[in-house]
Length: 179
Image (tube, rainbow, N blue to C red):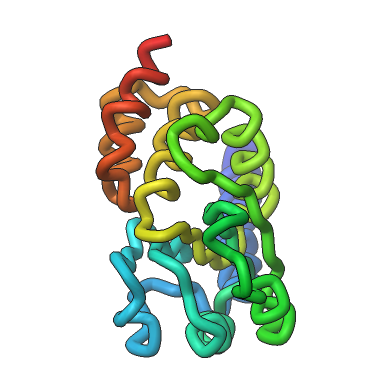
């Protein structure tokens, strides 16, 4: 065989093996909102493997894990979580749990977005439930991450944020993206 033909076959082999590895690594990729999670506040599935919503119950975290979920990113403030042991609920469901407290627009800082980006990037191949009180802060963080860490234009970032639930924080996010 000629060298170009061997290279083509090797490339095809690598693509096929990569696809198989991805399939094995993600046997339960969440591609639709599980019925057990459909009553969550403002639940959305903007892309496979990424659920954005309001706060989950302990039962919903168990259902998320059963559907193939891997990690929870909670953007609620400390005040919102008083008397809510969400971290222990996540641990009992064998979910990795991350908490970045975002109380409002003043907490949408470059540092908070960098922390969010690190978590999402490090777990990019895992199934995520990202939540706050309504999905609005999730959408804001997604938009800012897209612009500040992924090179999206302001318009692209806002559109992506809206897919995740960006609503009342939109004017503030637009202002941050103009800075």
